[in-house]
Image (cartoon, rainbow, N blue to C red; front, side, top):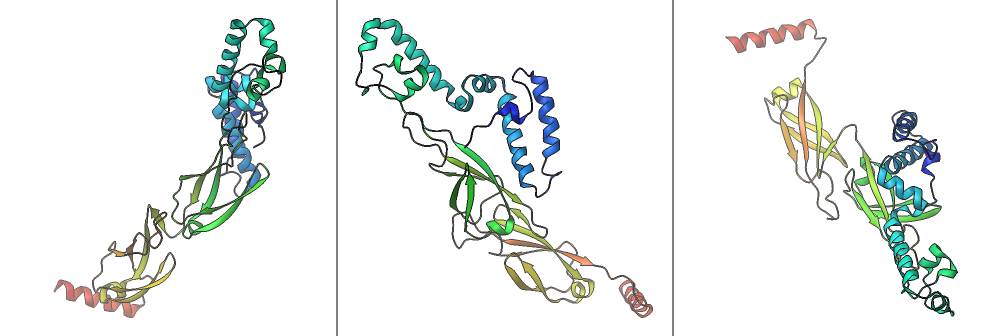
Amino acid sequence: MAFIDYYKVLEIDKKATDAEIKKAYRKLARKYHPDINPNDKEAEKKFKEINEANEVLGNTEKRKKYDAYGENWKHAAEYEKANQDQRYYNQSQPHEDFNSYGRDGDDYSDFFESLFGNSSRSRHRKQQYKGTDFSTELSLDLKEVYTTHKRTININGQNIRFTIPAGVENGQTIKITGHGGDGIGGGPKGDLYITFSIKNHPDFKRDKNNLYTNVTVDLYKAVLGGEITVNTFDGKAKLNIAPGTQNGTKVKLKGKGFPVYKEEGHFGDLYITFQIKIPTNLSSKELELFNELSKLRTS
């Protein structure tokens, strides 16, 4: 992932105070917020960069490390330890001996050379550090996570194809090993963490593996009973309405909910709440009949 200058992202100077950082963040976050820029991928990317920059520069300790080590700020502890070890070594070895060690280059550490240059080579064993982990967010709708499918995303100019298992949840994060930053001193690459942002569905509410929906039933069907056809998440189903069904009555369709994560063939349940629709714009004849029914019920 290319190095991002957090100061440029927030459009501030490196000498900016905490208050100036906070002010700049709020201003830009409002400008590029997804709610203000719907379906704008560039604005969405900018919004994420702004939040990332604020997370680092808005934290005193993280900002110190970032100012000192730039893109390698997450490895500040390793660099500081290496620096400390080198100072100790310089103090404990005669100058002439120090320059004579490892002239063939076999014992030189790339990590130390990157910090101190060739003139400060040591006999330390070569140290390796894992690369920086990358993270990204992937927005999907509920339909897209109902079935297992493959997806390709671009990270730092590299297309990465991976499988999204059915049933992933909103906010869930998965790890793709070896697709992060390059390691230090020949160490392994970091990992890529993908967090899912799943949009709501207009007709179905998801709660873990169960789905919830409302179905309208006309008054006559609710009173007399009968059969209706309802929408499920993956098709239609027929339901029998019992005579005298009340408004708010709930029924469960077993196995018609959401797929269970990484358990192929297992599904949650679908819960349906009936909403009785009262007829409007009744004709005079209908009103007359309802009046007769009312008298029968009260007699």
